[in-house]
Length: 111
Image (cartoon, rainbow, N blue to C red):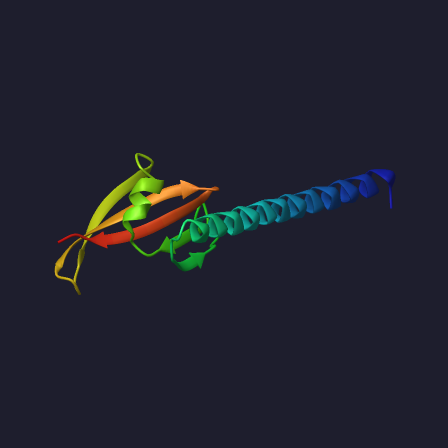
């Protein structure tokens, strides 16, 4: 084995380890943010219904029960959309807000 071959394989090993370390650091930070967000929401009296952390999502997603308090907590800081709710037979309004690098989502059917 030549010195050049040893240096190249060492470089490949270091690159792989660096990549793994970066992924683990992002995962740790994401989970810490997720825990902080869930704790903050529950401390505010918001009911958390579901939590998902998927690779295809940019951020962890937290689904919460609709509450008038959400509009106070996220006033002017959330995006809205809508869809047809077949069960309710009405238009449902979907909201997304970001806290602690997590998406907080809820849906409301207005009367």
